[in-house]
Image 1 (cartoon, rainbow, N blue to C red):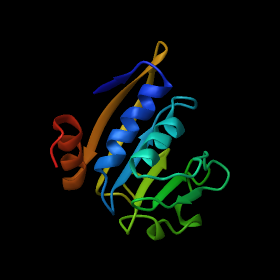
Image 2: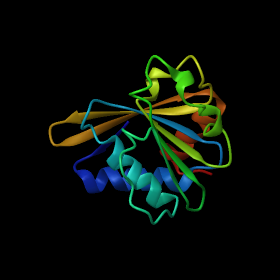
Image 3: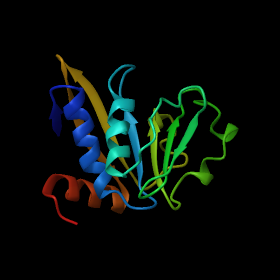
Image 4: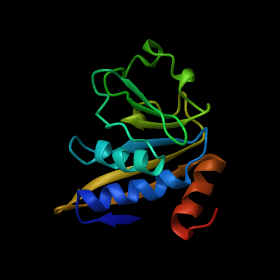
Length: 149
């Protein structure tokens, strides 16, 4: 579990995690509207050395960014009951990192190796809970918590 007191710290946590990510990694961000999923993703992008402005993909479903590794930033809230409406295989477990907002809507259907990060508002700050799934998810938690590579 990790805590951030403000947006800057939330982005810094994202950046630290972004620096650890490898091609094929999938992160599922879970949290209420306004919890900080896109802010956290901005930090991940910094960790991936992406210079472009990160915007919420709510209406586009997918945004792609180029950095040390490509970042595929998805928001699947709108496709909820119809995961076939987009070919997610193009973005999962490939040459880049995939960050999926509202990805819990896909769990059990398409995802098997990923790290779920639950972002909850606590007063003015945020509490982040790491919930790994599969071997790579557990490796990532180990690296995040103990700084090992």
